[in-house]
Structure formats: C-alpha cells, structure tokens
Amino acid sequence: MGDALTSFDVAFHPTLAYIASNHINFRCNTRRCPVTPHFLTRPDLKGSFGMCASSHWIASAVGQSVLERNGNAFDAAVAMGFVLHVVEPHLNGPGGEVVALIAPVGSRPQTLNGQGVAPEAATIAHFESLGLDMVPGAGALAAAVPGAFDAWLLLLRDHGTWELADALAYAEHYARIGHSVVPKEADTIATVAGLFREHWPTSAAQWLVDGTAPQGGQWVRNSAYARTLNRLGAAAVGPDREARIDAARREWRSGFVAKAIDAFIECTPHRHASGTSHYGVITGQDISDFEASYEDPIIGQFRGTDIVKPGPWSQGPVLLQIMAILDGYSDSELDLASADSIHRVLEAMKLALADRDAYYGPDLPVETLQTLISAEYANSRRALIGETASRDLRPGDPGGVSPFLPPLRHDAPIAGGLDIGTGEPTVSVTGTTQGDTCHLDVVDRWGNTISATPSGGWLQSSPTIPELGFQLGTRLQMTWLDRRSASALRPGGRPRTTLSPTLLMRNGEAVSALGSPGGDQQDQWQALYLVRVLAGGKSPQQAIDAPAFNTTAYVGSFWPRQWNPRGATVEDRVGAEVISDLERRGHVVTRAGEWALGRLSSVTRDPSAGIFSAAANPRGAQGYAAGR
Figure 1: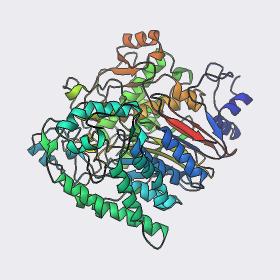
Figure 2: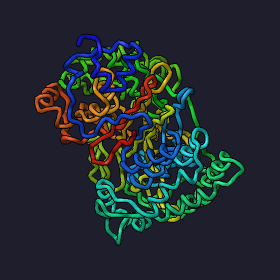
Figure 3: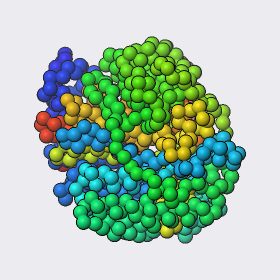
Figure 4: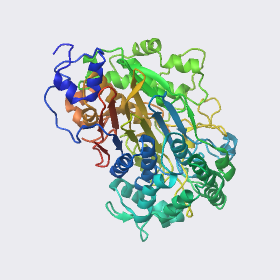
C-alpha cells in the first residue's frame, strides 16, 4: 500500500477522506490500515445531516430530535446537557459545572467556561480553623459556585436559536415522567444509602424509594427538579429571545434558586467525607456574582492536526503535552499493541501529569504554558523516557517558574473503601467520588460543532436541596490548602478542574469533537484515541473499542489525593504477555477487566464532502451515538 490511501480507506473513514482530499501526507501500511472490516461494538455512523454522541442514549436521542426540529448543534447540546442532569444524576447535575469547546461555522473556536469559582468565605484559614488539611471530597464545604446552568444558557443565547422553554422541555419531561435507572446509578445510591439515612435525610427522601435504593431498570422521578425547570422556563420573559434567556439567568442567580441554596446551606451542619460535620460557606451572593464566560482555547498539534483544548485551569494542556511527546515517535513505535509502545505512552502521560500537578492553575503565565506545550520542551521530556518505569514525580523546568511539589500520599488511608485503581467512576460510603462525569459531542448539517463535558453536583456529593431537587458539587476538593500551589484555594478563584473536552481542526475548520468522562484519566484515554486515529489509521469506533490503559502515577485530583508511583491500569484485552512485559519493566499493573476503561465518544466532519460520522463507547452499555 505504501504511502497512498486505498479507495476503501477513504470510504471507510471520513477523516481519512478529508486528509486525502487535502493532499496531507498520512503514512499507512497493511498492519494498521486493514482493508477488511473489523467487528465493532457500535457502528461507525455516517450521514450527511448531523450527528450526536454522548454518555447516555437518551441524551443522544434528544440531541438528534433537536437537529430534526431545525435546531443547531448548540440548541441540541443545551437540551442534551439538561437531560443528562436527569438521567445521569450520579455523574452530573445543575449544581455542578460544564466546560465546552465550540466551533461555530466561520468563527474561531472558543472555550465555554462554566466552571464556578470558590465562595468568598472559602479561605484556607477557614478550613484550617476546622482542623482540615484538605478540602473534603463530599459535603457542601467543597462546593464551588454552580456554573452549569448559566453556561448552558449563555451558549443558548449567543449561539443557539431555540427558546429556553423548548430547550428545557426534554429534561422537564424526564424529571416529571421519570426515567429508567441505569445499573451504575443504582449501585451509587446503594453505596451511599446509609449516609443518606443517617446524615442526609433530604437526600434519602429524594433518591431512596420507600427507604431503599432503587434497582437497575426501576422507573424513578424527580418531581422537585421538574418544578424547578418549569419555574425557570416561566421566568424567561422579555421583549426578545436574548432578553428572555437573560431573565431566566437572573432568576437562577438572584431569584428562587439562589435563595433556596442560601437558606439550606446556613440551616444546619452536615456530615462531610472527613467524618466530621460542618456548615457550607456558599451564599446567595456568591451565586449572584458569578457569570459564565468565553475565552480563547489553547492549541497544540499531532501529526499535522490542530488539537484544541481549554486552558490550564482545566487539565486540557496535559493532552497537548502528551501528544507533543508522542509526536516524536514513528507510527510503528506507537502501535499500542506492544509492551514497548504502551510503556512509551505511559511514561509520556506521567511526565505531562507531573507538570500538571506542579504548574497548572488559573494564573499560569502564558509564556510558561507555551513552553510546556512546545515541541522543544517535548523533546527534552521525551529524552527522559527509559526502558523501565520511573518511580519518581518528575515535573520539568519550563523556565522562570518554581514547581510546586504536592504531598505524595501513596499510603494514605481511603475512607469508605474507595477503589482508585481502575480510573472508572467510584464512590465510597462517605460520598467521596472519583471520575464521575458525562460527555457529549454534536455536529450539525451546517458544520457547527461542540464538545462538552458536564460534571459535578452528583447526587452523592452533598445533601439534596429539597425545594430544588438537586445538590451542590464538590469541585473545591481539587484545590490545595497550601498557598504555594498554583491551584491553591482562593476566594473567587477557579479550582483546577479535570473537565477536558477536545476539538480537532484542519485549515481552520473543525473536523472532530471528542471527549470522555473519567476524572484524571480523561486526557489519557483521549490520547489513545488520537494515536489510533491519527497515527494508526483506525476509524473512530475502532479506536474507542480498542483495549484501553492509563497511568495512576500522578497526584490525584480527587480527595484523598493519592499518588501511586509506577501504577498502571490496563484492560485485560491487551494480553497476558504484554502485561507481563510491563510488569518486568517495573509497572505495577492493575487488571481492570475486559471492558472497563474509557468512555469516549466522538463526532467527525469532512468539510469538503459534507459527510459526518459518530462513534460511542460500549463500556457500561450506556453511551450511544445517533445521526443520519
């Protein structure tokens, strides 16, 4: 086959078609670009109208419904986002946040910042006065200002076409009529049922059915949240569409929502993951003062493709650093089927994540960030990758900035039996949660594209506010109670979030949107996808289905913020021989099971041919794509 693409390759994969039509050199050989179809757990959807993919089939169906009713990608994403609050309440909620990357046709891509800030009373001194050395992983002390609602409405106002009530109607329907509980949601509620009964009675009233956790497949409702959505939709009154949406935003920030949160939080202390009881510190004024916003994203490259990410207040630059390191290897050195290639990728991930833990934060200087994602810096980091697994935390020296070295708590006790080995969503009996997030991607027939990662406000994060039907999030657990850290807790400051959606662009046009839930693993699993698609010639669904792996040798973003030197988690499908070889190299391998890691979805677009495709994750039997 040489360096040329066969006609089958072009037909099989729209991204390859675009590469071919633009005469972009793309090395391909018969080992990595087979000319025979492979078994897929989901089809690579292809069409010419529009595509939606997400972590829950109802959200994907809702998004496609919006597109069919002449809505654009941003209308669809908003409707999907609110539906995810209802059908995946253990993974996100209106009291949480959303980070999105948007690419309106004919405009530069933007980051939609729906990450709320720390309340004014959330000071390091206050936490220290309570005897805490970390922000707890569950309880309202860890609550940042909710950012998701305002961000979704800002997107709808500025880039959508629908009225708010229409966009909210789907979520209100599922909250009022009910939805079928997925097994993971049922397991989560069962895990924290004792906490709810003993310490969080409002959560017990909302999430338990006759005092017990619902079973997978059981039909449940959230009538309180349905009423909240109805009231917010009714508040959208004004002379034009923009004014109507802004009126609903004000009702959230200063009306009944903010007042209910304020009254509930100051009412009584409640049990936190620390095992102690405290009042929260968020107030109605904190909510009133926050507004979602847009900002410029950052851009890196891999194999000639632009990778668009949110800034260093997220972990987005981690993916750019990983891919810059891997770009120095040949395609054959990145086949991801051998211990050699998996070792290289694991070590690259560890180096990038060490820089994240040392330097990332909302105030990282632009020049330092540009150094971190540069090819020259990547070359110096790649030179550190040896034949064996490093056991050290090795942040680099991007020049002029001293690294913050966080405490390495590799032997810290884990309350409630939380298992952090797999990188998948895990919940302890104390409500402590790791990796629970949603994701959605949409491209419409005009080419508008969005990748969004909603999270936080989990049903297990803090007590339910009964008048509203939801709870606050715990994103402040990602801040340090150490003033030297770039991600230290600061009143009014953004916590460094793990939310990390991705856009791919060529010649100034979006060609793909992708992402994954998974906390600290989000960019690691996305790196595997990009290697397989851009260097390995896989289709999106092939890349998603392929065996996944990740490192756990980083300082965890979630309480209790453990570090697992040389830790690596792999799906058993990588093979016993490969696993043995990785262990021989010094990796401490956790076998996660056959289908356990990564929950990616993606949509792609070929601008020249007008062809769209989509792919979704089979793990958990929950994520689906829809389109035509």
